[in-house]
Length: 272
Image 1 (cartoon, rainbow, N blue to C red):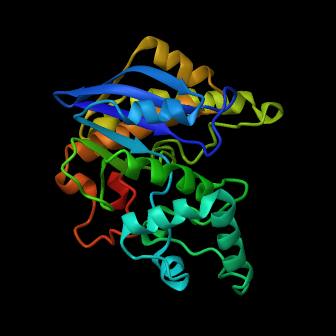
Image 2 (spheres, one colour; image 1 turned 120 degrees about the vertical axis):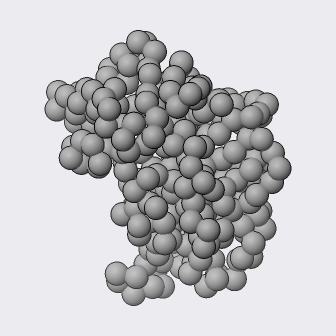
């Protein structure tokens, strides 16, 4: 099975591209063969258009909190909601989120989906600092328009399966939450490099098979790039692929049967 891991950004460019790991899962061994930089959304859409079967893990929220959606009167069918959001345009969507949050009391401005709470992730509404709300706006409509089988939000018969993943969960489990990345050049340290190396050592150890039910095999160039890339994007793409590969070998992609399809679900063994 072809496996993809996508570290996403809401504003790709040659300095901060979308990063995609390409791998093959055979006999419970995930071989990551290459990592590509995608500096434009057109490049990203070209990857999505590649014929299946494949399973991909995307590091951005597929949806928004049900509480927000219902409060704003948006459709409660995921596809219709995403179409509504896309029709607003970027500025319209962001203005709506900010206006809603501004009217909320302190401590209750940014809601979280159930999966965000379980994963200890920030709100999918967040537009600043780590702008996952902007990632949702740029990512979800593109997944929908490509006709993918988007689990659990929009099920189709397509052989291209999209899953929401969160690579920080892998780091928390194996690397004692040590920070391994930093986008700001002046803040990048040897400690970040050491943390990336330590996490890669774990990825090559039996601990991965014990937790994810498969082993990981990285091309030597991918290993070097994962250590050298101080932004952590290369390593994140590898972790996204690992989580997607795990989901491909467990029932229902590791998504609870009672999951809310409007909100979506982050797939990882820790979320069962």
